[in-house]
Length: 372
Ligand SMILES: C[S@@+](CC[C@H](N)C(=O)[O-])C[C@H]1O[C@@H](n2cnc3c(N)ncnc32)[C@H](O)[C@@H]1O
Image 1 (cartoon, rainbow, N blue to C red):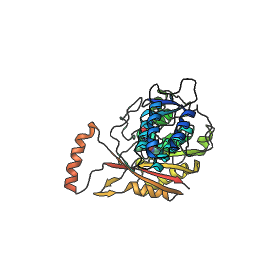
Image 2: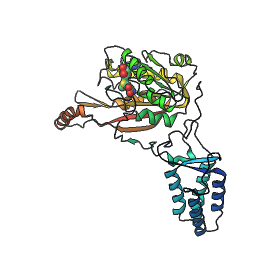
Image 3: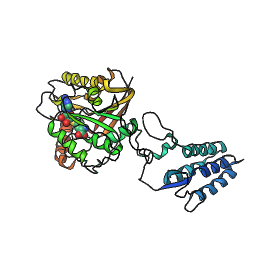
Image 4: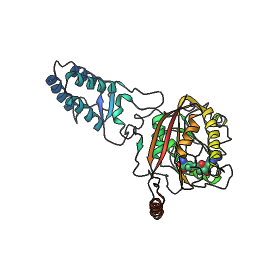
């Protein structure tokens, strides 16, 4: 369980908070208006009531709340689409159902135990991806996020995972912390993150980047220099007053396609594919021991090409996790874009692909598991 209570959220986590104009409505008056609308004897009467309610919710309308009034706050576009859906219903029963749904959203949040997504307003979370194909057009380069560490993932990956599988104040483990992308996102989202990274200079870099941004929720973001195949994650968490973690995000080397260091403990230096998978298994064991049951582990990894053959590294690594008490929940395929600096290389790969009868990698995987 988490040890540090963060400040109460100002808005539902990730529900486009701050991204678009919002509307403050008097909660009790809105519920009363919705009750009246649902009591309409037929569809024309309900639509007439809806016109009145929409006007009252508009600028200067009587449903708008003053500063001191008990209010419910909705994203403006979301409210408009909810009202439009009621108006577009073809049957009285359906229109009443949509009105009831809006009423539930007005009454308060309904969240799952593992995140803060308000299910009464699920349509407001347009930017939370629920499809298994992730086409991320542009890397988030806001604040201290940088693309110059070859091998870091786009910040959108840990952002999506943490908002989907954690609540504020919970702990996330990142045993391959690299330059600290998950830590930076955790700090912004109010999740504690424990990062472990083998290379001392990267540890320093991650700490520097994290401390260059504000910590609005006062979360802990320790980065430990160490070998994730051998560290005791439970003990590391205990050092910060936490008994366990609620999410793990693993972004290991994709075996030897990038050599990250000369350190023999580095997974990218594993002498063989079997050795790589065995070392990954050790990391999963260590992480699993510190993860709460029923909570999630995400593995971000791609395939590789060796001796003129496609090696399904992603699926082999997936089986390593599956064999350790985890249920597979999703296989996400994420696109990989080349950067400007790699474009010449891309041309070369295209030529090689044509000659060699294979396809150039344009995807990697995010495997999502739940601990049994
Ligand atoms: C793919 S990168 C992770 C990048 C990270 N997600 C980011 O966005 O910066 C893999 C990282 O794992 C580290 N690593 C490799 N073997 C390790 C081990 N045994 N223990 C801890 N870290 C290790 C490498 O140094 C490298 O930084």
